[in-house]
Image (spheres, rainbow, N blue to C red):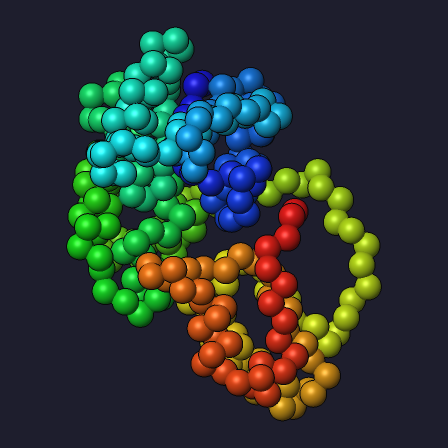
Length: 263
């Protein structure tokens, strides 16, 4: 099959869960004879083309035009999808929840949404309302899908509270892992709690820090190590800075923010 994933995330550019999934899954598909392309919008002024163990990576140039990003991205991505289909028919176009909003209905490929957890899904976890624009685009995206893949039953059921699957098939397929990796031999430190993931509200980092405070009162030698990239509010302010300003130095004693690290 010829499969195109629409995403701006991939480990060669930035850490993150969706990008890691695409790399693991994409490499496996490619090794089994399928054509795999990750197509997205970059941050450079020129197009970037790379290859990663059989996975083709294409990042179209960033928007330098007078068009709004949404219109520019839609035009450029649909143009590229049409060109790719003419060279070799695309069987499947896969995106995350909001991605199909910018894909033309006229494209003949089957369109699939993989439910990683979208804007509606995380509204409850982040204790916020639905942004009207993102909410509308997500609903529009769902109407275009020929089918859905949920990474867990919880994602499937929780998303259904907010969005309609329009009687299209929904399958649960858990995230794949690379079983060929050899885990490093490391000593177990019983006084260490480790978190790995984006440092943000929806991952429960604030609640973890508050729970750790209680743990440390009972076990003074305990340490909490947080590994992951920072998250930024729409105004550009840092989530980690917010935590450090909310809790004083004594409260955060034993808590260390390590930032993102390579796999």
